[in-house]
Image 1 (cartoon, rainbow, N blue to C red):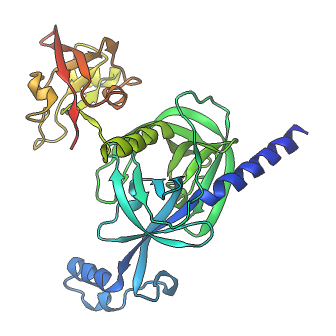
Image 2 (cartoon, rainbow, N blue to C red; image 1 turned 135 degrees about the horizontal axis):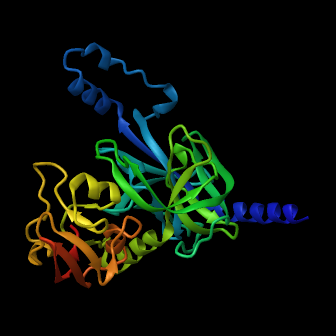
Image 3 (cartoon, rainbow, N blue to C red; image 1 turned 60 degrees about the vertical axis):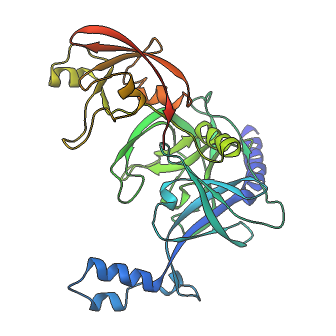
Length: 351
């Protein structure tokens, strides 16, 4: 009886959410793809004249689909949330396809510089169906969830059911084709089936409230998918409405979170905190003109606390920065030459 009730609730939620789930497609002119091919294969021009592109990928105007994913409508005026990596291809045209097969030219109006979030806009004469936005800061393990999207970019209007199987997960992912791998933190882990085409689609609770944005899968693993918590996206939408752009705080330094292994490897005096260090010889550990530089933070300093909260691998500098706002006054405790030092700074806006 309980199972049947749960199934009925899920079906009601699917009917409520699905009209607001969209496909996002990226297209380029065939001629442009041929030029790019020639640029990368100057000694083999013949192979670029007849690119092996399936006919179904080319529309009547000679535009070729080069990528895509999912998204969901959060405003009846046509504001759509998706992943930043879904719209990473340069020099493309964006099209949003709604559940009733209506096609809209889309414009990218904002990209979150830290989280894998992007905001699109489409113009519709009629109000569009929207999803209800929930919250992600008080989720529990075992909560039932539904993942919506376009599986593999082929199977539209796909939904899968599962549970929240992990919280605050960290994975290293390459969110854009030419970007270096980056750590994505605070992710929701779920066993609901998430495939590449699901990227950007909503992860909802059984009431249809969006709690995350489908983002990543682990290659070679089964029943392990990740979603970006919805709370950062809510902040992005608020920033966009209030300031016309996404505002993120800037500290201005490069660092490594210290673990027991890193302490032993680098012979550090402590087993916690954030070690200020450059990633490559050509990098700068502290960027000039930033709040960190103005506070006279130096390479090899170790930040021990952020507003008296200890920094650990589980509570990183990035976590503290993500919970802060532009203009916040911050107190840091540094360890320099085995002596503790307090510094104050005001977070700037990341450009």
